Image (tube, rainbow, N blue to C red; front, side):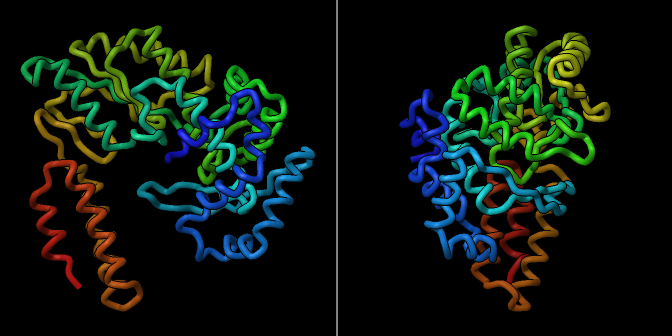
Length: 350
């Protein structure tokens, strides 16, 4: 059973008790530790698991809990990202909060919001874009334009007060709001107090969707843009009229500034014909087919060669290398990539 179904068994009127219950904390621990059992900090927490969870539960129950400081580092995936990592106890709590709040808020999100949601994801978003383009262009026989936008430094500039206000419209439990407030205001980006969400928190994924759900509703309900979809802070509107799309840009920009204190990235606002190719989420959508983005292709080849060399040197098992190769072949199965698939199957051997 997925997280959303498990969370639905809890009452919305008792969010706090549901979040901090020992049962929820234990399930959250089990979900959190997957793939992390070799990490020293996770192993240390596991050594005294019952004591650690009970102590966390008591601090939450007595409302003496304080979020720990973050450890920061940089990760290239593929862009250089500034990650902020909390302590294990806090990350377990992030899972506990997410388990209860996700099913409550997910019901309010528009259908075509694809980031960090069950049964959504990048491949479904790209398939939806292709469906929009086929419909608008009458199976690629008429004009079809795509307005593609990106919010500038999205996670770094999310306003804490606005976010908390948006959450309060749905969550009425005062104790739950106290805890959410503690999580949100535990972090700020650089010297910009009251702004930013840490990329390392599971709760940040949910909070980011809550925040831009306001943009989704504005574009869908106020601007009446029927063919709209969003993945994190990247969003696309498809229409047969280029002039119509151009007129939307200042309205969207003004809404973001006034209501959410966000800005469109000036270098990442484009309008393109479908025949020119729409670069979205690692793929380029073209009439009747899609191909892998050139940068994505280069990244796959570079990473796979690095893993191959590790396997040859005995630094990783051959099975681990094969798992990586199969995962990339899975990525290629979603687009036209016969030549690259053959290269991965026959030229990368150990």
